[in-house]
Amino acid sequence: MPRRIYEFRCSDNHITEKYIDEKEGQTTCSVCDKTAFRIVSAVKCSLDPISGHFPDATAKWANNRDYQIKRERREENS
Image (cartoon, rainbow, N blue to C red; front, side, top):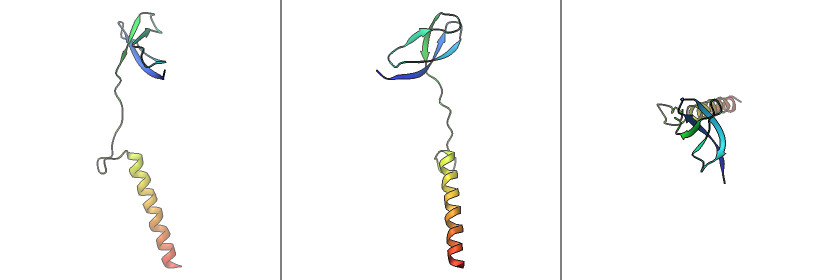
């Protein structure tokens, strides 16, 4: 059975992470030993507003394109 890291919240609002089987929906809070239930965590990601891709992908494309242009100019001047 696959194991993953999930976040859990107990009734005292302690949030903890555990590496656990994906079918498990509850565990013991590591802070207060109460029952903690699995919660859905927000995913933090941002997309480039121009291309819609991840910012690193746009930056990588721009760097590769700059390199290509410089290389083509060197070849033309040779």
